[in-house]
Length: 197
Ligand SMILES: [Zn+2]
Image 1 (cartoon, protein in one colour):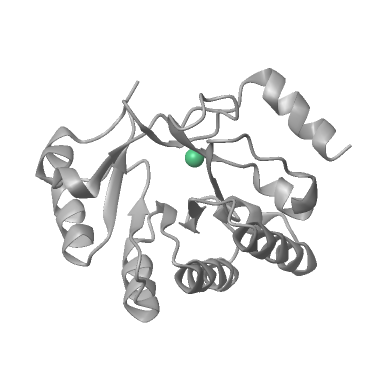
Image 2: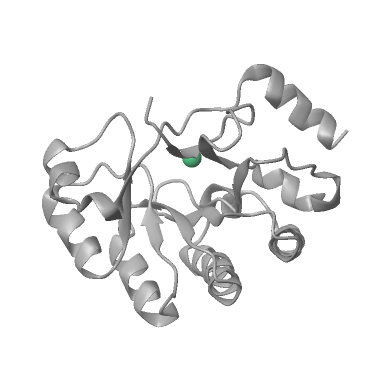
């Protein structure tokens, strides 16, 4: 367990010990969310959601995200990004990701990124957005060459328990994070469904 967990889905993590990623379905009812004092949160539309949600739902989620940002309840936007294996059509994924990346930039928030087999698209979008706060690819398992390419472009990396040791070692400590990417505990998942009930 890292000293600070950069990315977890465990809603019951001790406040301040982790950045807790909210289920993206909650973006449809942002006003019912009650942050725990001292807890750090990230929220965003996961690329997998672009495979199932229609455009009206994605727009509603974007509006919900804007509301959480306005209320200053977020430490980071995400996880959002691109996934060539489990995401929706690439143009939809890019549109949804870009919208969130621009919202983060305008709010001065960093972005936590889920990226599967889409790193060249991510690099292109990073150059296009020119963020002022870090973009961090979470759960990075890539080889050293890819790690170097992302780092050279200004993108930071977060590593879970399963990672390439050489990539980890070459990442400067001030641009490297540790994460569990833990799932929600079952009781929290039940609460989450009541949240929308
Ligand atoms: Zn995650």
